[in-house]
Length: 141
Image 1 (cartoon, helix red, strand yellow):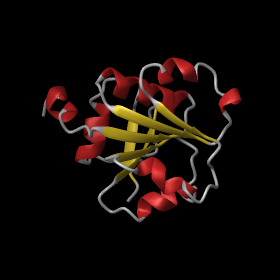
Image 2 (image 1 turned 180 degrees about the horizontal axis):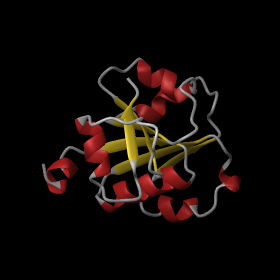
Image 3 (image 1 turned 30 degrees about the vertical axis):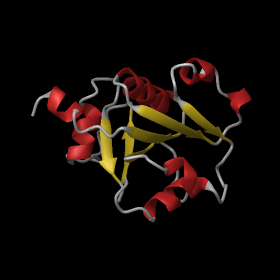
């Protein structure tokens, strides 16, 4: 399949969990392609540099929600939940996502992995087709 074909597989909205280097790179790539993005970041807004630049481009942010019980609302309307490296699978948003079987849940990294971890699922290939610094992806179920 071509990169254009994989790009057609992108959902209309993606929730990105974590806004450090990898989350920021994925958010940038998705916004460039017209995908609506919701970013969930456990840190307070004051701790994150340049997030207003993304907000001006239409990205919605939810800060400081790590253990919030209302974490499911950030998933509303999303076709994917993308986890940044280091986000535990016990995070409240991940737990809420597991209750939504139609929602694709995936982990990604901006660094090439050498441990064999990864997946060739259609969702992961679509993510990697963004031609960004994304180097690895795996569905997490």
